[in-house]
Each structure stands twice: as structure tokens, then as C-alpha cells.
Length: 472
Image (cartoon, rainbow, N blue to C red; front, side, top):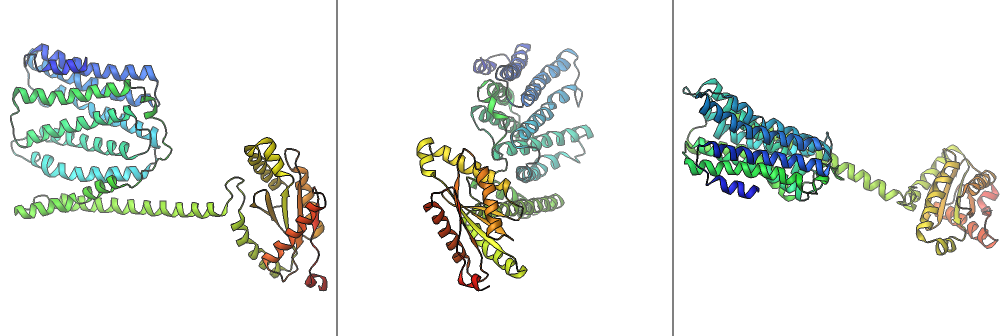
């Protein structure tokens, strides 16, 4: 139906009610398709699609209003009431894209906002030099015409910013999203086409007018098709990664936008007259500040990722406890503090009993759940000063400051009682003698652990005192 209507538009006599009726009907068809798609598929952020449908409906109605005023009332006011109805397309589309962007990536998606503003600023400078400035201040142009000469480019610039934000942000990119993007870009292409025709004072003729009208018809219908596609349900869903990645196409676009200001200045210097020096300078400052802002965002993102990597390197992924690497870095510091404070400190090696048998009987996933739940249960029984880490496999290690052998055994008895799934563990305890290295202390605790396992498991063994501790 859409294709036949667009093709048939070329065969209907120009400047007739039949042509106007067909043009309005095509727009209403696109709006109806958008509403029908929302009601059928119930997508996330349905309000955005209703705003799109409203914009298409009003823009199409503008043709009917314009023709009624001219053919029935025989009036040619400017600005005409039809201008306001036409222009309603822009706030409706911008509102819909804003809601959709918030739904997909959140309100505070600063990175995509900066990128979109950078690209829109570059286009804004082009619009000022080639479209707005030539129409402002002319003696043969009234104030109303000047205002409307600025309103349409400003609407397009806001649309460009929102389209860029949608395209570079996260979220699903199925057929519906691609059709929606095509509809928005088609609107912009039609506006650029009319701007070029107006700037060059061209007469498109009846055929040219029909072609340009068909561009907007295609945009109307693309809105309807995007809402009717089943993938519309995914378009408004929250993205897993909201912040845009600075990939090569985006970097090229940002670079091109940043070079627009110096490029325009160079062009006007070659032409022998700089007519937009202040605007170019202002645009250069704005683009420079936007680039600096984006660089600071990237630096903060890199620093956050570095902190996350450092944290991941020290944390066991399964249990959330410190891993062996973190433990090996922390133990020497704990021994230094014990030396400075003259306090006791003990280390306990813990090994879940018959863990391989448990894995074989219940499966590795059950074994992982046991490790995770045991770590959580034991952590709840430790004191605030104690530290538990996963040493490897089913082995854990605990740092017990201000504890001698007896207190360490009491703490381990609490842990054994809290072990989930009816399981138990064997443990070996070593109390630091004040001189031995970290590896020697862990080695003694490990020997005590094997002594506990050899003695029948489900028990705690204390490592024998060293010669240094015996003399003390």
C-alpha cells in the first residue's frame, strides 16, 4: 500500500485536491502504522512511538491546512498557521528520541551526550555559515522570515544530536531500530535538500516538488514500518553497556566535526573575505571544550577500568574472597604490624573434606555452590580483624591476628559448625614465631593440615613450635 501510494503520487495531477488528499493519506498511513505497531507489540517506552506518530500526523496535516488557506480562503499569510503545524514535527520527534534514548541508556549518559553535541556543533556551524546567516539581516526579508529561517535549521540540529546519541549509544539494533534510524535520516535528507534548493534559488518545478515530497512520504512510512516490526519490543530496552565505545567510525566523525571550524575559516580566507569570524571562533571554542570534556571522560573511564582490573586480580571470581595473590601480598604487612605491636598472629590452612567425592556425586556446579556458600558462612563467623582467602581448589587460608593456638582452634571450631551441606573440613594452625618468613609460616600450617587429614580429617592440628618460639 505504501509503495503504491508513493508511486501513484507521480500520476495524480499536480495542485489538485486529489494530490493533496493522497499526500495527507500517506502521512496518516505512516502515523496509523506507528500506533498499530505499538498497540500490537507493546514495546518498551511506548510513549516515544506515540510522539513519532503525532509528529508525522501533524506534519501531514500541515499540507491540508496550507492548501485550505490558499485555495479556499485565498490568503497567503506568513508565517501561515500551516507553518506551525508543519514545524510540530520537530518537537514531537525530538521528544520521542529523548524518551527513547533515556530508556535505552539512561538519563545521565554523559559520554554519548558529549559526542552528539560535538557532531551537532560542527553541523551547526555549517548551518550558520551556509543557511542561517545568509537569510538573517537581509533588507528584503522580514523578521518573521528570519525567525523561520533559523527555526528549521535549529530543529534539524537538535534532531542530528538525538540521532547521533541513539546511533552511538548502546541497546538493541534490530530491524525496527534500523528502520527508525532510516526514517530520521530521511527527514534530515529532505530538509537538507530543501535548504540547498532555497540557498541556490533553484526552481524545482512540479516534478522536483513531487520528488522532494516523496522523500518525506518515505520517512512517514518508515516510522510506521519500524513500529510494526516485531523487533520494536527490543528498541526501548535498557542497554547492557550504556556508554559508547570510541570506535573508528565515531572517532572519524568526531575528528571531522572538530575540523569544520578551521576548514570554514580556511575557505573564507581563500575566498578573500572572512564574513563569519566571530561564529567560527565561537564554534572553535565550543568544539575545543567538548573535545577536552570527552578526553577527561575517557581518562576517568580508563582509570575506573584499571581499578576494576586491579580488584579482579586480587579477588577470587567464584567466592568473592581475596585470592592467593592478594593473600601473598597482605601476609607480610600483617607480620610487620604484629612485630610493631608485639602481638600474636596465627595462620590457618583449611581444606574441605572429601571434596572430590562430593564433586563426583553431585556434580561440579554443586561443588562450586558449596565453595561459595562455605566462604559466605565462614566469613560470618570470623572476627572483624580476621581475613579469609581462597588459596586454591578447595583450600582456604585464614589470617587470625592477636590469636594464639588455643584461640585459633576455637575460631575454627565455629567455622566447622557453620560449614553448609553437612560438610566438614580439616585445618592446620601455625602461630608465627616472630622471625620466620611468610612462606615458612604457611609451610608449617600446611604441614599441620596434612597431619589433620592423615589423622582422620574433621579436626584441627596445631603445628609444632619452632626453635625460635620455644626459646622465647
